[in-house]
Length: 107
Image 1 (cartoon, rainbow, N blue to C red):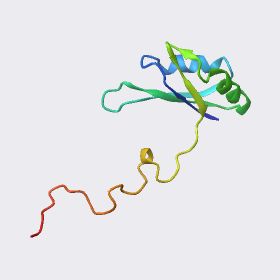
Image 2 (image 1 turned 30 degrees about the vertical axis):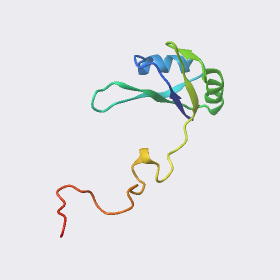
Image 3 (image 1 turned 90 degrees about the vertical axis):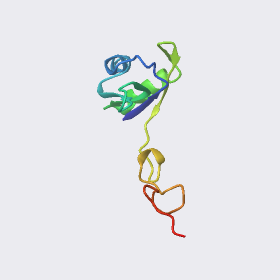
């Protein structure tokens, strides 16, 4: 099961996150999402656990728990839906037309 963890302290590392969840069972992977330009943590990440039972126990016990002075948010990660803005697959919010780069107005 894939688990979303939000409101993480910015100085928390992936190994630290893994250790927190390993108290509840085997962790297959841990990932903290970082800004691609600065490399700084975005304050959220994901944990994958093989056992749904262990994952659900971790979610119940760790949701709203304090980690590094912040109350983390923990829940089951849901796949992105088609058109989700973060996924980049949706329609254009401007309602059509192309970009304006080097576009010339016609009079």
